[in-house]
Image (tube, rainbow, N blue to C red; front, side, top):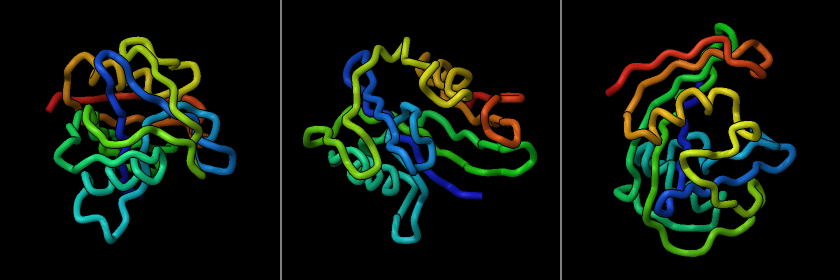
Length: 155
């Protein structure tokens, strides 16, 4: 099981979402910035700001991240990813296209393009957008194309 992050840059009532490039995990899906925590990362927040810079070209500080969720993702009975989800409302620089991600687009945070995002996002993202902080479990089928079940508890 991998431990990682997703950071959603928030601008007022809008969210920046970028499309992963071909050949990358999650290619073709809109998402925030994130990935695996590396041994050199001092904390999960440090991993989040590192990923935001690597994938989006902007710099934030760990204290600029607000943790809104931890979601465990399963492919059938295999625990694939423990994902720490953050909102970030403060950063330096302009978003850029990088090796991993296309230039992001702004969407209304209450109505993101769920049809172009991971299937589980439509289950947990509305909860955190509404102000809840959650711990969730999203169980996909083995191919990770459909969510079989989703449960959460508020933190």
